[in-house]
Image (cartoon, rainbow, N blue to C red):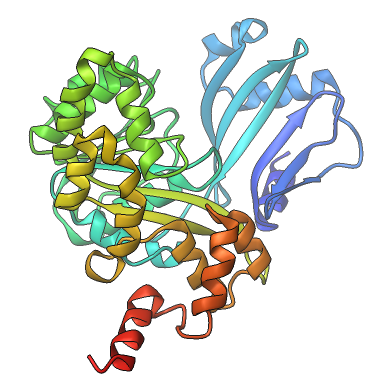
Length: 375
């Protein structure tokens, strides 16, 4: 089994699916591909699950487990985030591959602005996107940058722990929900007494977690967490909607004061194989803070992100996708499909595509226009 997993990781697998009555499959460059020539039996799947479950008490009650999360590693190969579930009454396993080496922003091909965001001293940073869009890798890269450049105490609350960070310039405390603390809410209440500078929360799942995270950001800590939302505007709306209507005005004010950045991402296919993250990056400006406080101005935020690229380093999905097309990393048709507004993306590429390189982006276009107008 370990040799099979090793081969899958070497082929670039991000996930491995193990189900009774089916082949073992791996998601390689976004597509599920069979790893075995024979379909797995119920006993084989159960045998694999028993090797992955770390605690004897959980193995003893295996038949009663409906949803179960843990992590598991192969020395020299990597670690896996493991989810065991039941489907049609029989067990199924989905394993997410986690590299041994902690990635940097440069390794992942992310915009350099992500390192600047990691340098914030306080407030809240949210990394958002659908499941499997690389949020955990982006957060790991931010922690990696801090670990190499700052002297901090970083506390992570994860379910389960994914990337294993070694102490370097920072002291990093990683707590596993269910093993090291009972829940996100319990761990988050306790973490404020543990002298943290940075708090990483695997996911903000409920009102209690969001409220406690806001409190931590308001009291001078840097809080990093994730939400399953598509973009910055939807992220803000989702957080506000968790609260009762009578509380929403105050939450808007608190969020406008504490939020520092929202990084939203989705993976797109590279020309040369593999995938790259296309990112929307919203950095909070005084105007965007005003829009967060006023529900009637929320729709202005996307335009403000686009306009703020040259001055603040923010960018929309479409701006980043245009860069990826210009740098020949991504095919035009692939980028157009991933764009927020494919028709608008097509128009902008036709208007500006030949005027600027990917490295220049919107800032480069503005420089070109200024020169043409004699400015």
